[in-house]
Image 1 (cartoon, one colour):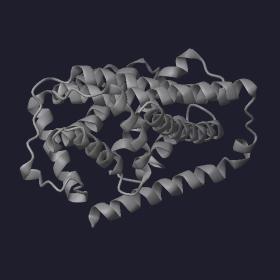
Image 2 (tube, rainbow, N blue to C red):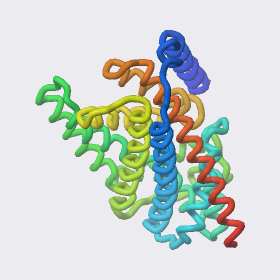
Image 3 (tube, rainbow, N blue to C red):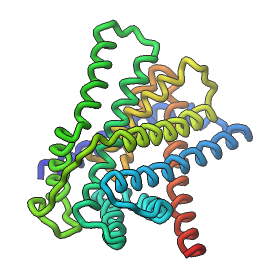
Image 4 (cartoon, one colour):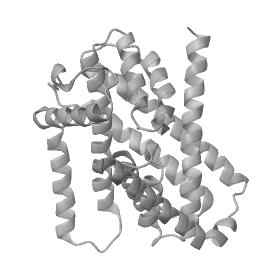
Length: 307
């Protein structure tokens, strides 16, 4: 009950913030025009974002292989892309459910299939934290040496938490939390053994690459609406990564809708014109969803044409 109330409170707060920002900057937003070059850059951003989602599907196959489950990369990338849109459904678990069922149909045990979809968001969150802490070191601010030391220590802590000794505890906790919300496999938490034996270095590096591709897509979208200089890129990349991380972990609308946008606006409105920030974030959400729809459609066509 408390979690449901918190979800609605966060959703209501983010929608109010976004509506207020939109109202206060509507005149500036309507004055923004995208020229032919800008549309070409947005098209490239869509392609880069689609590549990011495809890359994320490939990383899922790395995770399964890390769990000693040899799978067809093409087949499971198709599954990943086709189930990706389900994250926008209420509950925000149906994309995981679809991947678990697809893995089970490929003769992968329920325990390993569930572990793979629990490990993926954990690694994504860890990768986002690493990107935020690393890129923030290059952001030109008035932060002192103590804060930089804290950022470096934060990086060390994140890397240590991914050690199997600690990671297995997090995985079990995530499974219990998801089991309370939805148990699509009809398996009680006590019946499933979740253990990682090796440090997931390669999947972690892959997730950092995924964040890099998504960040490039965001920066390109921003550049399509406003001029940028090189010194501003670390700031944009850091803000995007942190906003994306909160959209992943904070309970709100499915798919991080609202949370990502509100966080990005709050972080960037003091460094860029607010109207440009709102417009770029809105266009990027459309770019991201278009890339996801395109990826799911192409995966569906590929599955049927080359079956």
